[in-house]
Length: 242
Image 1: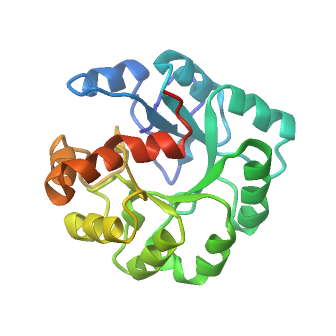
Image 2: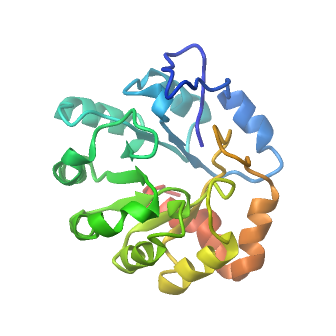
């Protein structure tokens, strides 16, 4: 999910500035579930600011991790400091911008993995994946947002899943595919690959997150695999210690 706290810097992106969605808003919206943790993801409108993220991680506490945006010339000391605060990944926002460019993807991904065990997260349309397939297969750890967004390129996404790439089962209102079919296809290739996220507050999404999105996952793949998608896959990926 995203936390949008107006106490901290926000950057207009493509003419858009999001409405507030604080930690308190998130907890109120999700109070009906037994939330064990989650990933707070920096959006295009937060640039390289980490002040909001450190604050949110301290407020939400154990089980929550951060996915931030960093320039490739960030120091090792800053990466280690962010890791100590709960950050576990760097996001490349290809869809919206506001992050480092893909020119530095391979070298940066290897560096943060070697230094802190972090992965890279890509907010990217699957239709762009075929030209990046070989590069992505060389990276030590990668996740892709929102089921890859597009039907075009989904076959390449499945090849990457077979290679160990993880996929966020999130943003169902953003995609141009049949969500149930996409989830089933990914699970058939690797049942450890999918990781559910609410995508709250669903900034700019044509259709925001609905509670029934969770039911869709359960009904599509059954309780045993749904437990992996809704909890244990992400817990393992983000290194949660029980």
